[in-house]
Structures are given as structure tokens and as C-alpha cells.
Length: 107
Image (tube, rainbow, N blue to C red; front, side, top):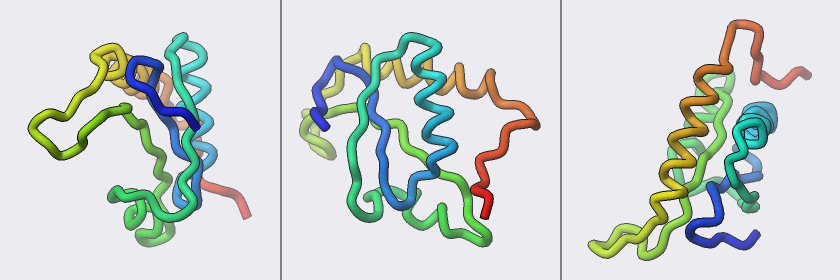
């Protein structure tokens, strides 16, 4: 998908992204009117989620991405609106969590 600064946070879809947790994040973003977009990841993500999701019986993982330019350089650039959206999303997700929510896939 198109990733641009200031147009919202990103969610990945891919093999090591838990679809239940990802949908929970997207649903929360929609309820809070937080702008977002989807990006496809054809293989493992270049994050710790690639290893964490296969630990023991599996750990549900999803990613909240903040669009940026010039990663890992002294001039890395982000939109503060995207950073604030990510913070708002994570706070809202934590408030929605309770013991009835299960992100584990059923087989």
C-alpha cells in the first residue's frame, strides 16, 4: 500500500502477523477515528515479531508502524501526527483489553 507521512499509522498483513490481534487493532483505530493503512509483508517482518510469534506454542504478534523517512540516520523524519495517533491507539487498545479476549487461533 501507499505509505506517506502524516496519513496515519500502518498495520502489516503477513505470515507472522496474528489476524485476530491485527483486526482488534484496526477495529480500535476505527472506533477512535485514527487514520491507518495496510501494508503487505510477503515474508517475515524485519522485527522481533518474526521470532516471537513462533516462541513456545506461539505468541500473538502484530505491528503498529509509524511511517518514516531515512530510518537509522541522524535525519530520520516522522510526522508527529502519526506518532500521536500511535500513542492514542496503544492507550485505547490497553483500555479495551479484558480476560474475555483471546487472540489465539483455533484449529
